[in-house]
Length: 84
Image (cartoon, one colour):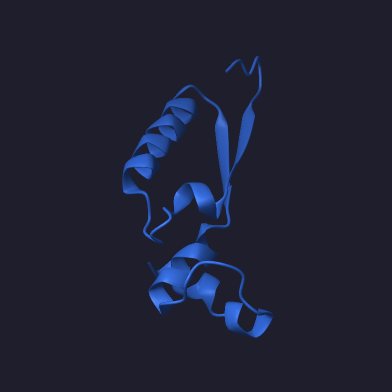
C-alpha cells in the first residue's frame, strides 16, 4: 500500500475482523495488526484505530450469542467489552 506523504492513517477495524465466529478475540490477527501499527508509527505516521470490537467482546463476556440485539439489551455490551 502506498500512502505517499500522508501523516495520519485512520484504520476502522470491525467486529467481524476482530472477533472470530466463535465470539473469541482473534489474538494472532491482533498481534500482527499491532506490529503493523508500530511500524507505521515508528516511520513517523500518526495511526488512529477505530473499532466496534467493544460491542462484540461485551457480547462474549455477557454470554450473549452473536447477532443483532435490541437497544436495551445492547447497552451494557460496550462497557463489558472494554473490561476484557
